[in-house]
Structures are given as structure tokens and as C-alpha cells.
Image (cartoon, rainbow, N blue to C red; front, side, top):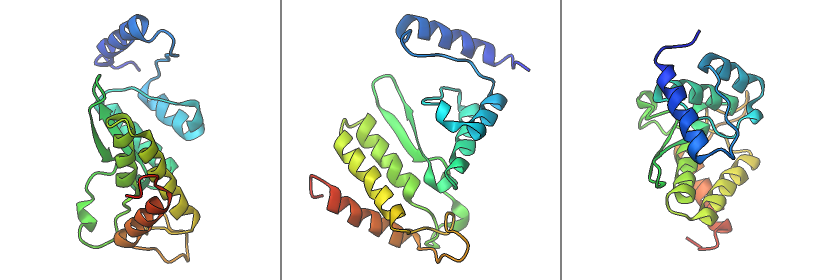
Length: 173
């Protein structure tokens, strides 16, 4: 069950852990077991480090725990904190221009950028709280709307988050 391509990965991660992160718990888990564990008990994980292939697979599994791929932000960071931030779902070309996409993963990816690359944790916290406020108010795009609940479009969801952010933001932006 061990993929040969994962042997080098395991060796490098183990060496890096011993040299620089010995104070952090490390557990090697096979990707299929990790996917099952994410469904079974997602709170057991704080951070999952894996290669791109397994990262794509596991991030899709994790996204569905939130109800939709439209809810999960992601980041690929280098050692200095520079990163590429994007929603897990990608561009969704099948619904492009139809005002149906869930913008929350994109907004939450922006929050990650503020926190991890721009050292603006306060702005990140306000963005995340604004998303929470909008969801607490019951707004839902089509991908997360319950049966019988009228969904809002991309524009309305985005405007609602911007309004909530403005009301929370210490910068008044």
C-alpha cells in the first residue's frame, strides 16, 4: 500500500521535522487513510502537509465537509510566507458569468493572504468574521442553500460580505 514515489517525501519530511520542527507533532498517514480520517474526525488535524496530487485530493474531501467546494480557501506558501492563494474549487468555467458561483472561498483565500503574507491578522479576522456574519444571517448561494431556501447570487453574497466587513473593520475600508 506504500507508493514508491512517497518514500522520498517521507524521508525529507522526517529529516526536516527532526532538524527544524521537533516541537511539532508529526504523523505519517497514507493518503487514502487520511481521506477517511478527514471524513471521520476532521478536527484531529490542524495542518496536513502533502504533495500536490494528494493535496488536491484531500482538499476536495475537506471542502465537502463544509458543504461545498465553494467554501474552502487554500494557500501554497514558501518558506518566507509568500504564497499563492485561491479557492479549492478553481475557476468553475461551467457557471462563469451566470452569477451563481459561491465567492466565499475566494474571500476567505484573501483573508489567508492578509494573515500569512501581509501580516495583517486583524484584517483577516474581520474578513472571516464578515463571512460568518453573512452566513449567520442566512444568506446562501445555490451550492449551500437548503431545500426550499432561495439562494442569492455571487454579486449579492459578495456585497453582503463587503457590507459586513465594513461594519466590523477597524480601518473602515
